[in-house]
Amino acid sequence: MGKVVDASDATFDEITGTGWVLVDFWAPWCGPCKMVAPILEQIASERDITIAKVNTDNNPNTPGRFGVRGIPTLVLFNEGQVADQRTGADSKINLDNWLNGHMN
Image (tube, rainbow, N blue to C red; front, side, top):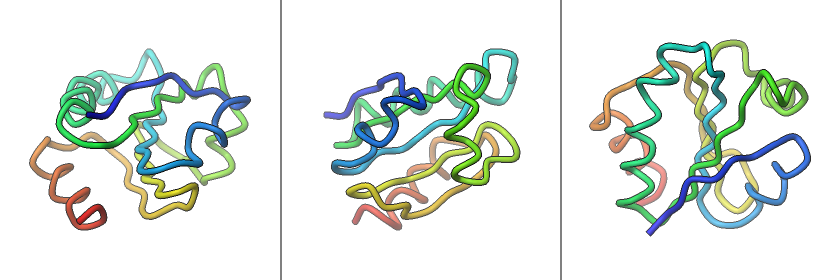
């Protein structure tokens, strides 16, 4: 099904340009980011979606492009265009419902 990849300022546009991509803006010190990470891995295993993880500590330019003020921030792309965005950790059921609203 899907996959989980690391994205950087240099690779971001290439990774988000094709198909459904859910970008996870995160940092190693962020507790809620650690909570949502396994949920995103599970979503990638169940859906035809790429989860692109952007470490905001190492890639400062890309978060600013999308107005990221807090992490985790999830930005959903379809064919390179932003479909939706949300901030904060959430349950798998809520994330699935959110994705279903866009992907179905």
